[in-house]
Image (cartoon, rainbow, N blue to C red):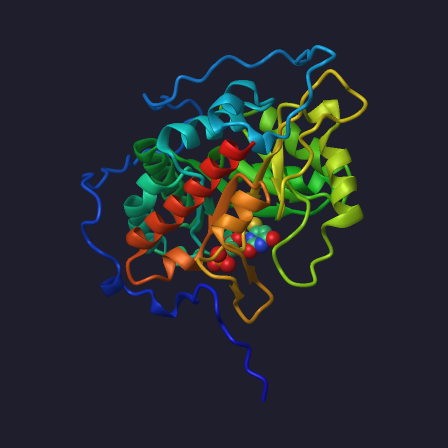
Length: 347
Ligand code: S5P
């Protein structure tokens, strides 16, 4: 019988409380507020966000458009067309991390404990809120609200943003309900979410209308391609997704892509005077090339960031399934950051 070889990060089998170091950071355990989500939150002292850039960035005729991958995160944080993008790039530059932790655990208490330990290493926390097994001790909605409020408190304490990996894929009207309502109320707590482009531009419009009603910046990533073997993204699909993202209507909302290499960045042809900047976030990252036996494909931080021009590495089991998640997260952070520094030096 064929048995798929697992050469990348291991699944969660290894995770148990004994594998999680109890005092890896010198931060005190947070006292989580018992109150539920408030739209207005105080901004971390680390962040003094610059004002939005002008909607058009004039270039003189001799100036060549530079791909985003050759610029520093800091310079991009001043000109990125979305407020969520500016905030994220500023966090990345100031914390010196382009690591996104994919927290695909199902136990809410374990998640909070790990996020508290790993918060200092990351610029972004990625969640799958619908895989979490919330306890039926109170109503589910109350448990979820309390959990997301705690996540927001941790994001504030350690200065990272939250990305709910919802992968919306329906018509505009339906995704509005899914984003705003239901038991998860994603728009109320997730800074960033993502969507497939397959339904056409209505999905972006629907999500943007919800985001426009939220006081804090909200950003959207479109999936241009996926990390899994045989996925239907990339190529012509990616070109069409990029064309959709470039519409002026969602400038300020579509902040980038899930993709395996740099996307766009050289101007869009129609608006020759503008430079565009899409933040590319990339899953399928391991310390070695490999796979998980279920189609996931892993590349190294050096390949993803250094060679292929991606901005943020998304790592799940490689960190969460490790015996010492904090030590391993530091290896991912350091290698991904060095790959970025090498890239901008070359550019
Ligand atoms: O193409 C993709 C897109 C995403 S968002 N491939 C992915 O693997 N993801 C997500 O990234 C996936 O849902 C999971 O949450 C994470 C990768 O986890 P890992 O354990 O394989 O690092």
